Image (cartoon, rainbow, N blue to C red):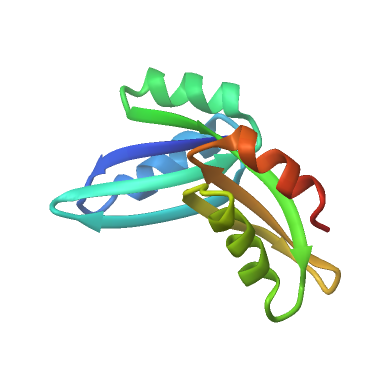
Length: 128
């Protein structure tokens, strides 16, 4: 998976236009966080077709950065997120972004962007 970080003007309609661009290309958004600060809008998103998203975003002249995304599932219970984030902190890994992709009675499916993906892969493999 890939996360896209997109910088937009912070004004009405820019997020709508981004969503329309992706929709017109048949790209589904799986995770998203968006906020405005200092006149700029920042959108972090995970989609089902990262190659298609990269192409269409560049085609529309949007400024993008890409980050690898790791995926894991934690138990759907109090403390599960605390255990995961403590394990990451103890491994001296910084979380850049974390998305809830899906929840069910069985678990919470997460997408995580970190500063050292190789260090995290073994930690995530034992989660469930």
